[in-house]
Image (tube, rainbow, N blue to C red; front, side, top):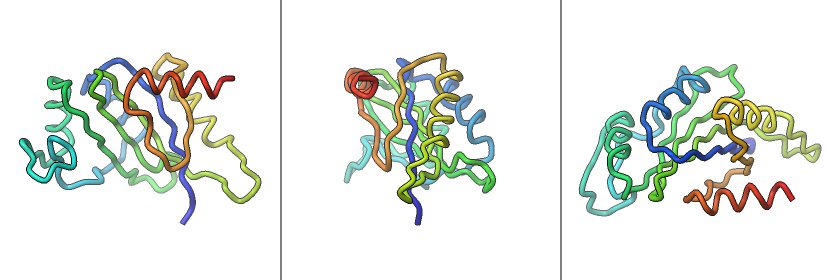
Length: 153
C-alpha cells in the first residue's frame, strides 16, 4: 500500500453549503466512508446518531459545540484526489482536506501534493493550508495557523 499526502485548508465557517461545494468541486464522484456518525464522535453512548453525512453536516452547522470528522472515497479511479475530508472543530472552524498518493520512494517528489495545495488555496482564497503525511490536521484554528507559520519559516 502506498502512502497518502493529506492536504489541508482551514476556514472560519461551519457552512454545510461550503463543505458540499468543496466536495462537488474536488470529489464530484464520491461515497461516504462511514455508515453512521455519532455525537459526540466516538462516544460509547451517543446522544445523537446519523446515518448519512448530509444530516450530520446539517446538525454540525447549527451546533458548534460539537466536533466531528467526515471522510469520503473518490469513486473516480483516474482522479489524483483519492479521499475528501471535512473536519468540524469546536472553535467554529472547519478543515477541508484532500488525500493524494505520495511519492515515498526516496525521490520525494512533492509536485502532486503542492499542486493540490495550490488549487485549494485558490479555490478557498486563502493561504492557510499545509501538507501532512497520513496525519490528521490540527483541531482548532489557532494551532492550524501556528503550523502554517512554522512551515513558512
